[in-house]
Length: 129
Length: 235
Ligand code: SF4
Ligand code: SF4
Image (tube, rainbow over all chains, first blue to last red; front, side):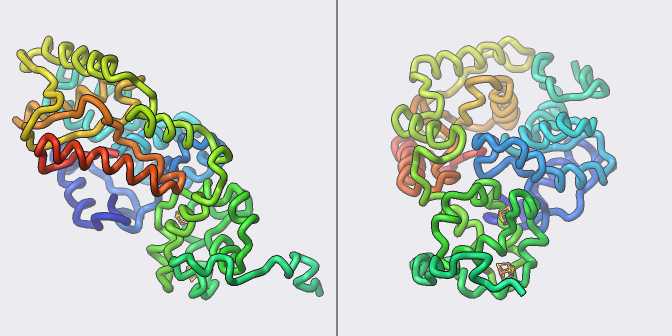
Protein backbone atom coordinates (compact mmCIF):
# COMPACT_ATOMS: atom_id res chain seq x y z
CA UNK A 1 0.00 0.00 0.00
CA UNK A 2 2.77 2.44 0.91
CA UNK A 3 5.57 1.71 -1.58
CA UNK A 4 3.51 0.62 -4.57
CA UNK A 5 0.30 2.66 -4.28
CA UNK A 6 -0.07 5.72 -2.08
CA UNK A 7 3.45 6.59 -0.99
CA UNK A 8 4.73 7.96 2.32
CA UNK A 9 1.76 10.25 3.12
CA UNK A 10 -0.39 7.19 3.83
CA UNK A 11 2.36 5.81 6.07
CA UNK A 12 2.25 9.11 7.98
CA UNK A 13 -1.53 8.74 8.34
CA UNK A 14 -1.08 5.26 9.78
CA UNK A 15 1.48 6.57 12.26
CA UNK A 16 -0.96 9.30 13.29
CA UNK A 17 -3.61 6.65 14.04
CA UNK A 18 -1.20 4.38 15.91
CA UNK A 19 0.25 7.20 18.02
CA UNK A 20 -3.24 8.45 18.83
CA UNK A 21 -4.40 5.07 20.11
CA UNK A 22 -1.28 3.87 21.92
CA UNK A 23 0.15 7.22 23.01
CA UNK A 24 3.14 8.82 21.32
CA UNK A 25 5.52 7.71 24.08
CA UNK A 26 4.64 4.06 23.45
CA UNK A 27 5.32 4.14 19.72
CA UNK A 28 8.64 2.89 18.35
CA UNK A 29 9.20 3.04 14.60
CA UNK A 30 11.21 0.36 12.86
CA UNK A 31 14.14 0.95 10.56
CA UNK A 32 14.07 1.22 7.61
CA UNK A 33 10.47 2.31 7.33
CA UNK A 34 7.73 3.69 5.05
CA UNK A 35 8.52 3.30 1.33
CA UNK A 36 11.96 1.97 2.16
CA UNK A 37 10.72 -0.78 4.50
CA UNK A 38 11.00 -4.49 3.86
CA UNK A 39 8.03 -6.74 3.12
CA UNK A 40 7.19 -9.17 5.94
CA UNK A 41 7.04 -12.08 3.50
CA UNK A 42 3.34 -12.88 3.92
CA UNK A 43 2.23 -11.19 0.72
CA UNK A 44 2.11 -12.14 -2.92
CA UNK A 45 0.37 -15.43 -2.16
CA UNK A 46 3.13 -16.81 0.09
CA UNK A 47 0.73 -17.86 2.84
CA UNK A 48 -1.29 -19.85 0.32
CA UNK A 49 1.48 -21.29 -1.86
CA UNK A 50 2.66 -23.84 0.71
CA UNK A 51 6.34 -22.75 0.68
CA UNK A 52 6.46 -22.39 4.45
CA UNK A 53 10.21 -22.87 4.90
CA UNK A 54 11.07 -20.25 2.30
CA UNK A 55 8.48 -17.93 3.85
CA UNK A 56 10.11 -18.24 7.26
CA UNK A 57 13.50 -17.51 5.72
CA UNK A 58 12.11 -14.50 3.91
CA UNK A 59 10.66 -13.22 7.19
CA UNK A 60 13.99 -13.16 9.05
CA UNK A 61 14.61 -9.66 7.79
CA UNK A 62 11.31 -8.48 9.29
CA UNK A 63 11.88 -10.47 12.47
CA UNK A 64 15.23 -8.74 13.03
CA UNK A 65 13.72 -5.33 12.34
CA UNK A 66 11.03 -5.98 14.95
CA UNK A 67 13.47 -7.31 17.52
CA UNK A 68 15.72 -4.28 17.02
CA UNK A 69 12.87 -1.99 18.18
CA UNK A 70 12.68 -3.82 21.52
CA UNK A 71 8.88 -3.40 21.38
CA UNK A 72 6.55 -5.98 22.96
CA UNK A 73 3.83 -5.49 20.38
CA UNK A 74 3.94 -5.27 16.64
CA UNK A 75 0.87 -3.65 15.06
CA UNK A 76 -0.04 -4.89 11.59
CA UNK A 77 -2.56 -3.24 9.28
CA UNK A 78 -3.36 -6.17 6.97
CA UNK A 79 -4.44 -9.80 7.33
CA UNK A 80 -1.47 -11.21 5.48
CA UNK A 81 1.04 -9.19 7.51
CA UNK A 82 -0.67 -10.22 10.72
CA UNK A 83 -0.57 -13.91 9.85
CA UNK A 84 3.08 -13.76 8.81
CA UNK A 85 4.41 -11.52 11.60
CA UNK A 86 2.53 -13.57 14.20
CA UNK A 87 3.84 -16.81 12.73
CA UNK A 88 7.41 -15.43 12.73
CA UNK A 89 7.18 -14.70 16.45
CA UNK A 90 5.97 -18.25 17.12
CA UNK A 91 8.37 -19.96 14.74
CA UNK A 92 11.48 -18.14 15.97
CA UNK A 93 10.19 -17.98 19.56
CA UNK A 94 10.71 -14.23 19.49
CA UNK A 95 8.17 -13.48 22.21
CA UNK A 96 6.56 -10.32 20.83
CA UNK A 97 2.79 -10.07 20.32
CA UNK A 98 1.21 -9.25 16.97
CA UNK A 99 -2.02 -7.27 16.93
CA UNK A 100 -4.27 -5.97 14.20
CA UNK A 101 -4.52 -2.20 13.99
CA UNK A 102 -8.30 -2.46 14.36
CA UNK A 103 -7.99 -4.52 17.56
CA UNK A 104 -5.88 -1.84 19.17
CA UNK A 105 -8.30 0.88 17.99
CA UNK A 106 -11.19 -0.99 19.67
CA UNK A 107 -9.09 -1.41 22.81
CA UNK A 108 -8.48 2.35 22.88
CA UNK A 109 -12.19 3.01 22.28
CA UNK A 110 -12.99 0.82 25.28
CA UNK A 111 -15.18 -1.56 23.27
CA UNK A 112 -12.91 -4.58 22.80
CA UNK A 113 -14.95 -7.60 23.91
CA UNK A 114 -13.72 -10.32 26.24
CA UNK A 115 -13.51 -12.95 23.49
CA UNK A 116 -11.73 -10.63 21.02
CA UNK A 117 -8.40 -10.60 22.82
CA UNK A 118 -6.64 -13.65 21.40
CA UNK A 119 -3.60 -11.67 20.27
CA UNK A 120 -3.10 -9.50 23.35
CA UNK A 121 -0.44 -10.30 25.93
CA UNK A 122 -1.15 -10.63 29.65
CA UNK A 123 -0.39 -6.96 30.27
CA UNK A 124 -3.30 -5.83 28.06
CA UNK A 125 -5.63 -8.81 28.31
CA UNK A 126 -7.79 -7.30 31.05
CA UNK A 127 -7.53 -3.61 30.10
CA UNK A 128 -10.93 -1.93 29.74
CA UNK A 129 -13.03 -4.97 30.65
CA UNK B 1 39.06 -21.34 -17.22
CA UNK B 2 35.47 -22.59 -17.52
CA UNK B 3 33.95 -21.67 -20.84
CA UNK B 4 30.36 -20.32 -20.97
CA UNK B 5 29.10 -23.29 -22.95
CA UNK B 6 30.30 -25.61 -20.19
CA UNK B 7 28.03 -23.83 -17.70
CA UNK B 8 24.91 -23.63 -19.82
CA UNK B 9 23.59 -24.63 -23.17
CA UNK B 10 24.11 -21.45 -25.16
CA UNK B 11 21.78 -22.64 -27.90
CA UNK B 12 18.91 -22.05 -25.48
CA UNK B 13 19.53 -18.34 -25.41
CA UNK B 14 17.07 -16.34 -27.47
CA UNK B 15 16.70 -12.65 -26.71
CA UNK B 16 13.48 -12.55 -28.70
CA UNK B 17 11.44 -14.78 -26.41
CA UNK B 18 10.38 -12.05 -23.99
CA UNK B 19 10.54 -9.15 -26.43
CA UNK B 20 6.86 -8.41 -25.76
CA UNK B 21 7.52 -7.93 -22.03
CA UNK B 22 7.27 -4.20 -21.30
CA UNK B 23 9.29 -4.34 -18.07
CA UNK B 24 12.59 -2.86 -19.34
CA UNK B 25 14.46 -6.08 -18.52
CA UNK B 26 16.98 -5.40 -21.30
CA UNK B 27 18.03 -2.17 -19.59
CA UNK B 28 19.49 -4.05 -16.63
CA UNK B 29 23.08 -3.05 -15.96
CA UNK B 30 23.58 -6.04 -13.63
CA UNK B 31 24.59 -3.78 -10.76
CA UNK B 32 22.98 -6.12 -8.21
CA UNK B 33 21.47 -3.39 -6.02
CA UNK B 34 18.10 -5.15 -6.32
CA UNK B 35 19.63 -8.35 -5.01
CA UNK B 36 21.16 -6.72 -1.97
CA UNK B 37 17.78 -5.17 -1.10
CA UNK B 38 15.73 -8.32 -1.51
CA UNK B 39 14.72 -10.25 1.63
CA UNK B 40 14.61 -13.55 -0.22
CA UNK B 41 17.96 -13.30 -2.02
CA UNK B 42 19.95 -16.47 -1.49
CA UNK B 43 17.03 -18.82 -1.02
CA UNK B 44 16.93 -21.47 -3.76
CA UNK B 45 19.86 -19.57 -5.25
CA UNK B 46 17.41 -16.83 -6.21
CA UNK B 47 18.03 -13.13 -6.45
CA UNK B 48 16.19 -10.60 -8.61
CA UNK B 49 19.17 -9.76 -10.79
CA UNK B 50 19.44 -13.39 -11.85
CA UNK B 51 15.76 -13.55 -12.69
CA UNK B 52 15.97 -10.37 -14.76
CA UNK B 53 18.95 -11.87 -16.57
CA UNK B 54 17.15 -15.14 -17.20
CA UNK B 55 14.31 -13.23 -18.80
CA UNK B 56 16.49 -11.01 -20.90
CA UNK B 57 18.35 -14.10 -22.15
CA UNK B 58 14.98 -15.59 -23.07
CA UNK B 59 15.30 -18.68 -20.88
CA UNK B 60 11.60 -19.29 -20.57
CA UNK B 61 11.37 -22.83 -19.22
CA UNK B 62 13.96 -22.19 -16.51
CA UNK B 63 12.06 -19.13 -15.34
CA UNK B 64 8.54 -20.55 -15.57
CA UNK B 65 9.26 -23.97 -14.07
CA UNK B 66 11.40 -22.70 -11.18
CA UNK B 67 10.15 -21.73 -7.75
CA UNK B 68 11.79 -18.31 -8.08
CA UNK B 69 8.75 -16.28 -9.16
CA UNK B 70 6.76 -17.77 -6.27
CA UNK B 71 9.20 -17.19 -3.41
CA UNK B 72 9.28 -13.48 -4.25
CA UNK B 73 6.36 -11.50 -2.78
CA UNK B 74 6.35 -8.86 -5.53
CA UNK B 75 6.97 -6.35 -2.74
CA UNK B 76 8.75 -3.89 -5.03
CA UNK B 77 11.74 -3.09 -2.83
CA UNK B 78 14.04 -4.08 -5.71
CA UNK B 79 12.31 -1.76 -8.15
CA UNK B 80 12.39 1.02 -5.56
CA UNK B 81 16.18 0.87 -5.45
CA UNK B 82 16.87 -0.10 -9.08
CA UNK B 83 18.72 2.72 -10.89
CA UNK B 84 17.12 1.63 -14.18
CA UNK B 85 13.58 1.40 -12.74
CA UNK B 86 13.11 -2.11 -14.04
CA UNK B 87 9.63 -3.37 -13.23
CA UNK B 88 10.70 -6.51 -11.41
CA UNK B 89 7.45 -7.28 -9.52
CA UNK B 90 5.40 -6.97 -12.73
CA UNK B 91 7.92 -9.15 -14.50
CA UNK B 92 7.62 -11.77 -11.75
CA UNK B 93 3.83 -11.71 -12.03
CA UNK B 94 4.01 -12.10 -15.81
CA UNK B 95 6.25 -15.17 -15.38
CA UNK B 96 3.75 -16.60 -12.86
CA UNK B 97 1.00 -16.17 -15.44
CA UNK B 98 2.88 -18.47 -17.83
CA UNK B 99 2.58 -21.50 -15.52
CA UNK B 100 -0.01 -24.10 -16.45
CA UNK B 101 -2.90 -23.44 -14.11
CA UNK B 102 -2.84 -26.88 -12.51
CA UNK B 103 0.80 -26.28 -11.60
CA UNK B 104 0.15 -23.04 -9.72
CA UNK B 105 1.43 -23.72 -6.17
CA UNK B 106 -0.69 -24.40 -3.12
CA UNK B 107 -4.34 -23.44 -2.91
CA UNK B 108 -3.99 -20.24 -4.95
CA UNK B 109 -5.61 -21.37 -8.17
CA UNK B 110 -8.21 -23.55 -6.46
CA UNK B 111 -9.31 -20.66 -4.24
CA UNK B 112 -9.48 -18.36 -7.24
CA UNK B 113 -11.52 -20.88 -9.26
CA UNK B 114 -13.97 -21.19 -6.37
CA UNK B 115 -14.24 -17.42 -6.19
CA UNK B 116 -14.95 -17.10 -9.90
CA UNK B 117 -17.56 -19.85 -9.71
CA UNK B 118 -19.29 -18.99 -6.42
CA UNK B 119 -18.34 -15.42 -5.55
CA UNK B 120 -15.93 -16.30 -2.74
CA UNK B 121 -12.85 -18.43 -2.17
CA UNK B 122 -14.67 -20.72 0.28
CA UNK B 123 -17.64 -21.49 -1.96
CA UNK B 124 -19.81 -20.33 0.97
CA UNK B 125 -23.50 -20.17 -0.04
CA UNK B 126 -25.28 -16.84 0.24
CA UNK B 127 -27.69 -17.98 3.02
CA UNK B 128 -24.79 -19.19 5.18
CA UNK B 129 -22.91 -15.95 4.65
CA UNK B 130 -25.92 -13.85 5.68
CA UNK B 131 -26.50 -16.13 8.67
CA UNK B 132 -22.92 -15.60 9.88
CA UNK B 133 -23.08 -11.82 9.43
CA UNK B 134 -26.37 -11.57 11.31
CA UNK B 135 -25.18 -13.88 14.05
CA UNK B 136 -22.06 -11.77 14.65
CA UNK B 137 -24.24 -8.64 14.49
CA UNK B 138 -26.50 -10.03 17.23
CA UNK B 139 -23.51 -10.75 19.46
CA UNK B 140 -22.40 -7.13 19.08
CA UNK B 141 -25.93 -5.88 19.89
CA UNK B 142 -25.67 -7.65 23.26
CA UNK B 143 -22.66 -5.57 24.30
CA UNK B 144 -23.11 -2.35 26.28
CA UNK B 145 -23.17 0.70 24.03
CA UNK B 146 -24.17 -1.30 20.93
CA UNK B 147 -27.87 -1.82 21.67
CA UNK B 148 -29.88 -2.13 18.46
CA UNK B 149 -26.79 -2.82 16.30
CA UNK B 150 -27.61 -4.54 13.00
CA UNK B 151 -25.53 -5.33 9.93
CA UNK B 152 -26.60 -3.17 6.99
CA UNK B 153 -26.48 -5.73 4.15
CA UNK B 154 -27.00 -4.41 0.57
CA UNK B 155 -27.90 -0.95 1.81
CA UNK B 156 -28.73 1.49 -0.97
CA UNK B 157 -26.85 4.77 -0.99
CA UNK B 158 -24.51 3.96 1.93
CA UNK B 159 -21.31 5.98 2.21
CA UNK B 160 -18.94 3.01 2.32
CA UNK B 161 -19.06 -0.44 0.78
CA UNK B 162 -16.81 -2.97 2.45
CA UNK B 163 -15.66 -6.31 1.07
CA UNK B 164 -14.88 -9.28 3.33
CA UNK B 165 -11.72 -11.38 3.56
CA UNK B 166 -12.96 -14.99 3.44
CA UNK B 167 -11.14 -15.86 6.66
CA UNK B 168 -13.37 -13.44 8.57
CA UNK B 169 -16.44 -15.57 7.90
CA UNK B 170 -14.50 -18.76 8.43
CA UNK B 171 -12.10 -18.87 11.36
CA UNK B 172 -11.77 -15.21 12.41
CA UNK B 173 -15.27 -13.80 12.94
CA UNK B 174 -14.05 -11.64 15.84
CA UNK B 175 -12.20 -9.49 13.30
CA UNK B 176 -15.56 -8.58 11.75
CA UNK B 177 -16.58 -7.21 15.12
CA UNK B 178 -13.65 -4.83 15.34
CA UNK B 179 -14.38 -3.22 11.99
CA UNK B 180 -18.09 -2.94 12.66
CA UNK B 181 -17.62 -1.49 16.15
CA UNK B 182 -15.30 1.16 14.74
CA UNK B 183 -17.90 2.02 12.06
CA UNK B 184 -20.57 2.25 14.77
CA UNK B 185 -18.43 4.44 17.03
CA UNK B 186 -17.62 6.72 14.09
CA UNK B 187 -21.31 6.96 13.06
CA UNK B 188 -20.34 5.62 9.63
CA UNK B 189 -23.02 4.77 7.05
CA UNK B 190 -21.70 1.52 5.60
CA UNK B 191 -22.84 -1.64 3.89
CA UNK B 192 -21.68 -5.09 2.83
CA UNK B 193 -22.83 -6.99 -0.28
CA UNK B 194 -24.87 -10.19 0.28
CA UNK B 195 -23.01 -12.13 -2.40
CA UNK B 196 -19.82 -11.74 -4.50
CA UNK B 197 -18.32 -10.23 -1.35
CA UNK B 198 -14.83 -11.74 -1.59
CA UNK B 199 -12.18 -9.18 -0.64
CA UNK B 200 -9.13 -11.17 -1.74
CA UNK B 201 -8.21 -11.31 -5.39
CA UNK B 202 -5.86 -14.19 -5.97
CA UNK B 203 -5.68 -13.42 -9.68
CA UNK B 204 -3.16 -10.82 -8.50
CA UNK B 205 -0.97 -13.57 -7.08
CA UNK B 206 -1.37 -16.12 -9.87
CA UNK B 207 -0.92 -13.63 -12.71
CA UNK B 208 -4.45 -14.29 -13.99
CA UNK B 209 -5.56 -10.94 -15.43
CA UNK B 210 -8.94 -12.19 -16.62
CA UNK B 211 -9.91 -13.53 -13.20
CA UNK B 212 -8.63 -10.40 -11.53
CA UNK B 213 -10.77 -8.27 -13.81
CA UNK B 214 -13.84 -10.39 -13.05
CA UNK B 215 -13.33 -10.00 -9.30
CA UNK B 216 -12.79 -6.25 -9.53
CA UNK B 217 -15.76 -5.92 -11.90
CA UNK B 218 -18.06 -7.50 -9.33
CA UNK B 219 -17.11 -4.93 -6.73
CA UNK B 220 -17.55 -2.11 -9.24
CA UNK B 221 -21.02 -3.52 -10.05
CA UNK B 222 -21.97 -3.43 -6.36
CA UNK B 223 -20.89 0.18 -6.15
CA UNK B 224 -23.06 1.06 -9.16
CA UNK B 225 -26.05 -1.01 -8.09
CA UNK B 226 -26.08 0.30 -4.51
CA UNK B 227 -24.96 3.80 -5.50
CA UNK B 228 -22.07 3.75 -3.04
CA UNK B 229 -19.23 6.22 -3.60
CA UNK B 230 -16.47 4.91 -1.32
CA UNK B 231 -14.93 1.49 -1.19
CA UNK B 232 -13.18 -0.02 1.79
CA UNK B 233 -11.25 -2.96 0.38
CA UNK B 234 -9.19 -3.94 3.35
CA UNK B 235 -6.93 -6.50 1.65
S1 SF4 C 1 18.99 -3.05 -9.59
FE1 SF4 C 1 18.08 -2.92 -11.65
S2 SF4 C 1 19.80 -2.57 -13.01
FE2 SF4 C 1 20.67 -3.31 -11.07
S3 SF4 C 1 20.81 -5.54 -11.33
FE3 SF4 C 1 18.84 -5.13 -10.40
S4 SF4 C 1 17.42 -5.00 -12.14
FE4 SF4 C 1 19.48 -4.78 -12.97
S1 SF4 D 1 9.71 -7.88 -5.36
FE1 SF4 D 1 10.55 -9.94 -5.14
S2 SF4 D 1 12.59 -9.79 -5.97
FE2 SF4 D 1 11.93 -7.70 -5.53
S3 SF4 D 1 12.67 -7.26 -3.44
FE3 SF4 D 1 10.56 -8.02 -3.28
S4 SF4 D 1 10.79 -10.22 -2.94
FE4 SF4 D 1 12.76 -9.49 -3.75
